[in-house]
Length: 258
Image: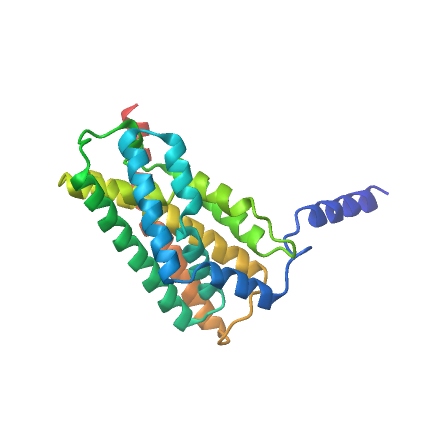
């Protein structure tokens, strides 16, 4: 009797936390995610507007304005599209979306730099300084945000609330605007700290989305041999350690000094 009860309880929990229960068809998931990561003229204009709004918000210490910039930024869509390309083992799409993301990052930083060069407000605000202190909490937020974002994108009934919420929580746009401020003020330390925060956010959103898509058995464009799969996992572990190393060292040093 106890064994049957435990077994039924396991089934209830398994069903309760299953991410495959109401998953959309693979073609719909593919079209939905890739369309959100398109690098088009429209998206680039929206992104430049978003980075300018974020820069104004950081410059004037306005949280509401910064949130508005995060809501309209298309960067999240590109990160999720890159995760889908990786999960589907599509090297052409991986190069396409990685190149698109790199272009978006460069243009965002240059746009923010130009704004801060022209801005009459020269002193760093609290909101700017908040984007120069990456820590383990940012890693946790990015991981949870990536999982929530990709789960929301892969449901039969797409939720319109998840992606904006993830964009606000993970905040991948403000660190790029902070990079622009640092460049305008020739502050290398501030630039590297803000860029590292962006890398943490973008990478852990990407890696968590990639893992969820793998669990959902995303079809591969090219079948991977067991050896290729092992190489991919080793590369993922290596990259994760590299990205985590500075923040882990900072956490250990902080704990030691306190």
